[in-house]
Amino acid sequence: MQSHSDSWRVSRLRPALSSLKPYVAGKGFGEISRKYGIAPETIVKLGSNENPYGPSPKVKEALAAISPERYPEPEKLLAGLANYTGFPEDMIIIGAGMDGVMDTLTRLFLENGDQTFIPTPTFSYYEILSIMAGARPIFSPRGQHHEVSDDLPTGTKMAFLCSPNNPTGNVISEDDVRGILESTEAIVFLDEAYVEFAEKSLLSLVKRYDNLIVGRTLSKAFGLAGMRLGYALAPRWIADQYRRAAPPFYGITCASAAAGSAALSDLPFMRESVKMIVAERQRLQKAIASSPSEANFLYLDTKQPSSEIVERFQARGIIIRDCRSFRGAGENHVRVTVGTPSENDRFLSAFLEICE
Image 1 (cartoon, helix red, strand yellow):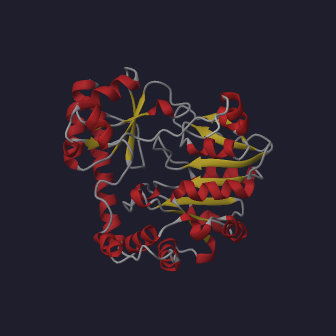
Image 2 (cartoon, rainbow, N blue to C red; image 1 turned 90 degrees about the vertical axis):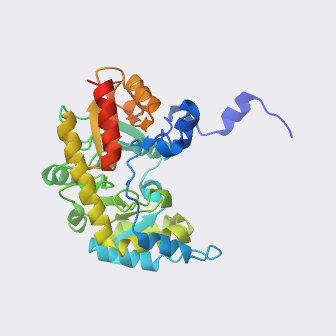
Image 3 (tube, one colour; image 1 turned 120 degrees about the horizontal axis):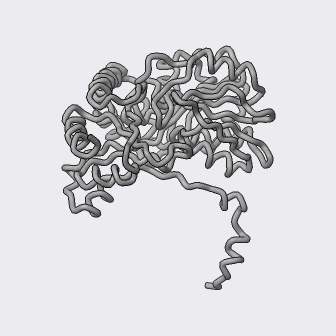
């Protein structure tokens, strides 16, 4: 095979890659087990905002019945989403995780020279999508209480809002979202990945504003993180174009389609797991006096550098998230997923040793 120089290789790549900050995922059982010599089954994973109760038992039944040699048929999944959201199927778009949905949406709206609006700290994939589309992300630091500025720069093509926000856990009020929608010509993407854990959704606004898209996922409340299944509610003029540009079968699999439709058929299971998570979130908030959260995680200030705090938790077999990878989060914040009562007890015991 012919070998080329480093300069040749660089010249083949898109220049935008030089400014790309890669997405940093939470650490897994295997990595911590190998590093610290801890048995995987004893590790408590509170770093990736997963649902510790998993999906409805109906999901396993559905997965056992799939035909992996067949391409996915999303009709049942779309019907389940329509029933759950109250939206017609022609306003529902689906993809391989919410990141898959956003990837197709940015291909609809963004091109070289455009700019996007991103309040920070927040989910870092918005920045990656902007840069890879050739757009320039404009970062807007959140206020003291993590509030979002409604002063979008002139010429903004897309705005990315997250409510409840990852990693801070706070929500954006309906008045603030309306204010942004009515003051800009930008397409506003409102990420509601964690909304089932919050008091209110702003989904109904999609029917009133033709520049609003609300993204959702089945990874969190429905316990399907491993299935990579996301969706969004969009005005028909956007949804129609999305279906033209989306990958074949929207990038989903027969397994994810079956799992999603099964989970949506058992809403009582999902709601019960959410109820237990919210109760544990409230218990944790009181125990450690954290800032309010309407998600399935807490955002904590640390006196010591977050990297040191996370390392000490990991050495005890407890995975929490170092927030240094979130632009604008600084060096002294960690994010802790709400687990089961026993997992949370493990965390609290370590917290009292490490952070008090």
